[in-house]
Figure 1 (cartoon, one colour):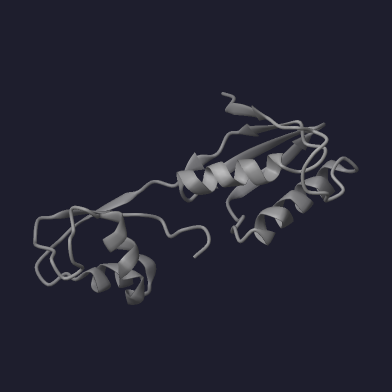
Figure 2 (cartoon, rainbow, N blue to C red):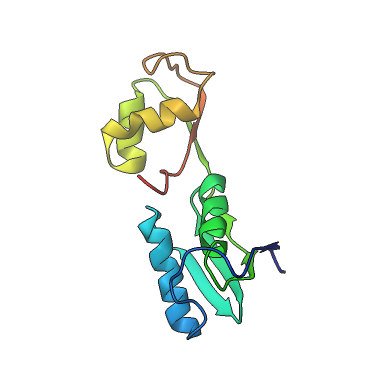
Length: 146
């Protein structure tokens, strides 16, 4: 199955020396993504002539879209084929004694990441301390720039 193909202006964009060697081009494209603050482990970049093919998993839809734009806005790239998937969002059913900090510690390994869970559950949550047993919360993947 092929993903969505997005066309770009081949003669415009960041000048990273694209078009010399497909392996070097893929490495340079990943470098361009990282330069913009994105983690690229889990994202595969392949070059087929003047088309870039992205596969693997993006953490969020926003990250997915931005990675496509970064790859496409490189001089020499005519199109980007987006075959990436989005990492699954988890849920957590609150039990007695749970706090957002405790959940963040279990899920992310860092209790101070509780605002990520809080923001992901607005407007259902009006305050980080106002959760109750039986409540189901959305637990997003950490932002790619985090």
